[in-house]
Length: 217
Image (cartoon, rainbow, N blue to C red):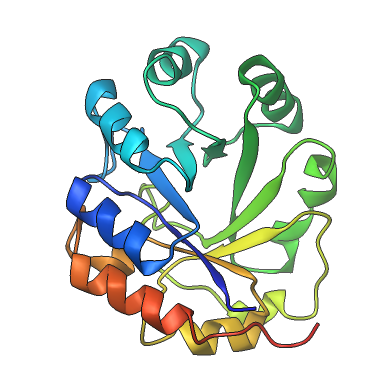
């Protein structure tokens, strides 16, 4: 089975069409105001989400409050919340139950110590996402930064997980070979400028992914 792909930070119908036609499994919509991919209008996000029917639709939030989530979810159909802040296991469970959505919890990774908290989330979230640590004062994701992918290769995790951080069509095969990822998440690697997805780059990334298989466990 080839590696499965989530395209994050989709902001236009044209990019979404490239995701659908290219074979993406998940698409992500960003609701974090400091991101260049921020969807400030729930109506605009709702239109994109309706176009994405049939794909797994993910809303990315950072330490969200209930009012913020309700404003978005009243308009935008989603299957997952992706949490990129300091959300505790209890907070993840609270949001999971309240909104009846699956949870992807993102973790910034630089070394072995960054996996210490994972067991406490095992009964709370549905998927983990591993991304590189952001620059000082930077956004929590979408920074085109990589970490040592091999740190994941010999580890087992209690939930499915996605590899993120600095992925491109050019390094995808090497990344999967080094870490054994079944799922990958790409954002800046399919953009021609910050916040703007390129249809050509999306299609190219997905075409490469269609030929990449995770190594045997």
